[in-house]
Image: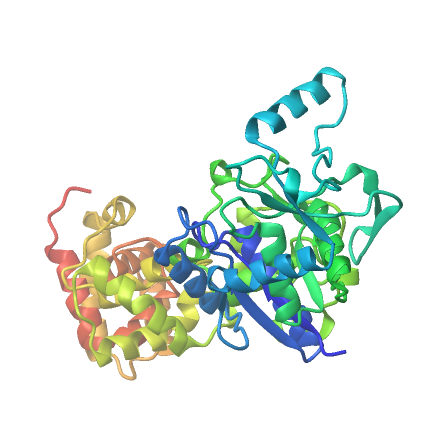
Length: 471
């Protein structure tokens, strides 16, 4: 059997983290088996579905690198097909018209509530002749569900789950206006798309019993199912906006790499021994539904950030330059040329070792390409006092004639100077760092000097000497 999975979001907002993980698990399962991963947009709620939300879902999946096979299917466009299936069930005696009015249904539920009975449709039109229908009441179409026995779901995560059929009433397939319900639409779409495995959140487990009954009424094969536990916040409650639950694009904008996000989402509810850092290639090779746990996972921003730092250090330097340049141009109000980009790439090895997100990386890299004179933060200004400037003035004379201008030679020069002046190395290197970067945090300062070159380094030192900001 060729595996076919699907991701079927409703376009009523962004691609949230829970949905992104569901998409990832479906994508990995399909890719592991050499199958197909399909995308369906469940846009039947016309009041809440928006083109912007559809595009946000597409953007989020593309950023995560979760490519889908074939064109996306839009559920609303298939409403006629859904209705046709309901009419087929009517013709085969597997569904029926129900003419119960809203007032009748309300009275029925109130009576059931008063008697302490479960509130469900009582089947009052199940076996009645439509000729008894009251005038002017548009009917709904209900499934003639089995009333004895049980419906059994064999779930790849939850195990075998059973429900007595007497607990399931005759669900509505078509509303009174002829439009199909969610339950019917999902089943028809999954069947027509050839879905073999449905991987979704365990909040859909109760739907699986009702949907199985539609499959059985139509004589269709029931897909295998896996209902994965939801993601919770740090406090153990269902992840929500109050926990900072955001869309995939928000994590991109916060500076996370898609490969790090894939790895983190994979580990939210799935495991492979003690492995924490799992490449996408390994994930495809290793992924199975057997590795999905039954307990909810807790979203931990600190863990995601640390994992992103690991991936950042392994990322291609040219790619990182491409990611930080737009942010730098925006924050600095400049257009960076090729020379600036070459400098950033040359310095990337020292920069990315100190950052955990693209935002941090851009902040750390800004001093390389910031227009002169550099602004100095408060800690840097304290180092550029009279003693610090005296050190810089002495060093400028020596640096002006230093050749070669390499990190090793520059370190030797500064060490010799420090010994001559009976200064600790930090007393010399720290004012240098402050003058050259405007901060007390940077890559190794002799590396910085080599990359900036003699002229730019001396110019920055002179700027620091000319600076009259109070320390």
